[in-house]
Amino acid sequence: MNKAQLVEAIALDANMTKVEARKAVDAMIRTTVQALRQGDRLTLTGLGTFCVQQKAARTGRNPRTGAAVKIPPRKTVKFRPAVEIE
Image (cartoon, rainbow, N blue to C red; front, side, top):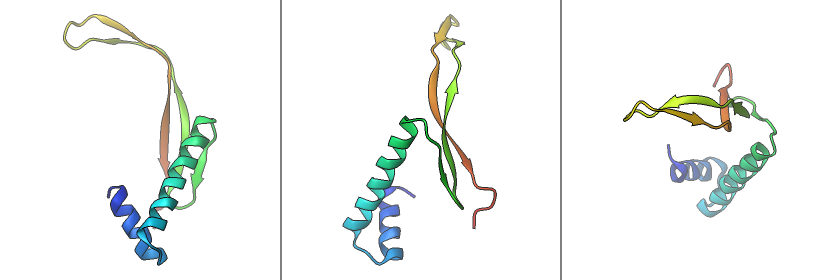
């Protein structure tokens, strides 16, 4: 399912227009990104939890040359699904 299909499904399920549903989906995405940038955890009961995970610096390999490459530390988003999805 892509974003357009999600908007259409929400519009049908919530009995609203596609424009209103698109605004709601966009607001949800903006709010989620903003919370994760601040380091917060987002838990949606029945769906799962989004959190920011810190990855340590490491040494990788260039696949073409085999030369060692330093990979800097970074933050990634981790999703842990709910135990039971209905």
